[in-house]
Image 1 (cartoon, helix red, strand yellow):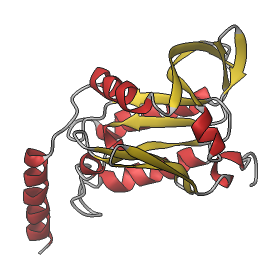
Image 2 (cartoon, helix red, strand yellow):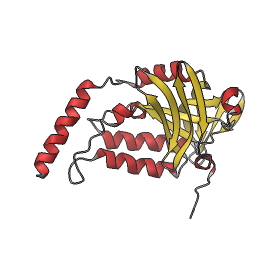
Image 3 (cartoon, rainbow, N blue to C red):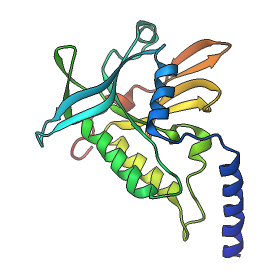
Image 4 (cartoon, rainbow, N blue to C red):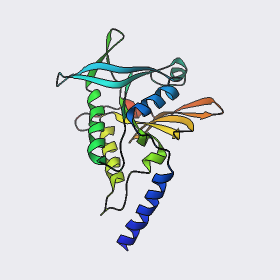
Length: 217
């Protein structure tokens, strides 16, 4: 029965893979991000900095700052980071996702140089092809005793949450953009919904970006 269940899951997975319009690279993801999110955020690409404890140079893909209309809706006027990653769900998934999340975590312990001043990020987010629900469904899950990358991904996201790292998730899909959400394992901070070319905004839980998780918390 276990083998038959795994076979059925693989058939379902292959069908979903064949019918999903997918991203293929980080440059493609960055182009999409720049086009869709510039209306809500000031986007500063390739910002240099230094890791505070290791004293090594770092560079984050994006530093973002909310535009006035977001601040008026309750979005905190702080700088935060975005690291863009492309994850192949079929090849080296755990190795690449764990490194990508750890890289993003390290930026919260760094200072960056932007507009002739030093800044510290309030939190950092990973933006990837997994930010889209259909591609998230392509993470393999053949059962607890078989290949289950979904379980590993959820575990990594929970650990990253304690380091003030979440995910920049997209509502809709690659072809039909319906808004965004800033999500952590502990809950959603803020989101937008796009309908008829108009955006509505909602702040859900600011504790997920303000809670200090150091030592025995």
